[in-house]
Length: 356
Image 1 (cartoon, rainbow, N blue to C red):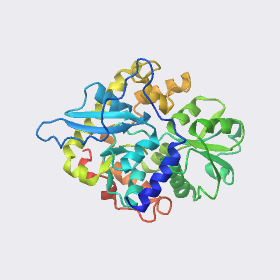
Image 2 (cartoon, rainbow, N blue to C red; image 1 turned 60 degrees about the vertical axis):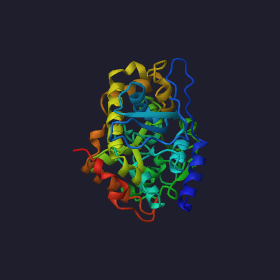
Image 3 (cartoon, rainbow, N blue to C red; image 1 turned 90 degrees about the horizontal axis):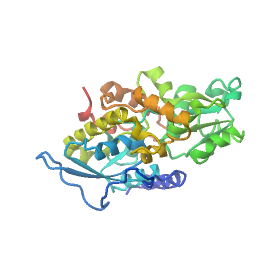
Image 4 (tube, one colour; image 1 turned 30 degrees about the horizontal axis):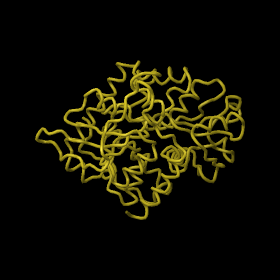
């Protein structure tokens, strides 16, 4: 393992300690599929055989789990375990699983650290609804990000994709250095809104679920929505995750990857058609609760509205050349932020699986 990857894993381990590992212990909830983490997957099934794929699922992967449990995959058997975000990334980087799910800019970072990893689709990719949150009473004081310069800014961890994206947006759109032009305060994602409410910090960036909660509460204001900020200026939404794999696996299993994308997309459609399964006590409640869906009734309602409107997750058909070009433009802004040199577009993204 190269030194860059070892450093990356160290950061992820630290981040994982601040994240909640998800377990399927809820009564009536779907349990993880049985699997042996050490069992090698079957060969690519161009002959009609079923491909056995092992993965660690996070709260963001509801459509993947639904596709497996509802029998929506075409000749793919997804053996999965529910874990925290950090652990999922760690084990993928360590080579435990052939397929992982991180953001496009993290794929670029992995590449810059010597890992032959490419991002290959947007099925149920979580729209980067994270944002910068302030107290509603301070709305007149802080009207734009520049007004918070020098202030205490909470965040869920320097190793998270959320922080990295904030660094890029601060640099690209506001000519600010996120680490030196603010006073960063790292804390558990679940504690950040409380720190903001009590005045211990002046603003906070947080994960998508907590940002959705802020949209429904009168005492908070979302000053800056990352995806909306980028889409307004560049025409395409940002996403915080999506499937990725090592290039060798993709070249050898392109049809498996294509069928994986199609099945996840069908899982997302099933979720939209069966919203009760995603409510508290529902069949898949234990998957989405770790994403903050059940923080309160207003949050649950808001997320379901965004799901039905096609805003919460992207579909597979978003993975077009136009979207890739926009994401690469975003990634290029990360030069000097998360990588000294940005790898070529065709290495970060697996272009054979672009949608028409």
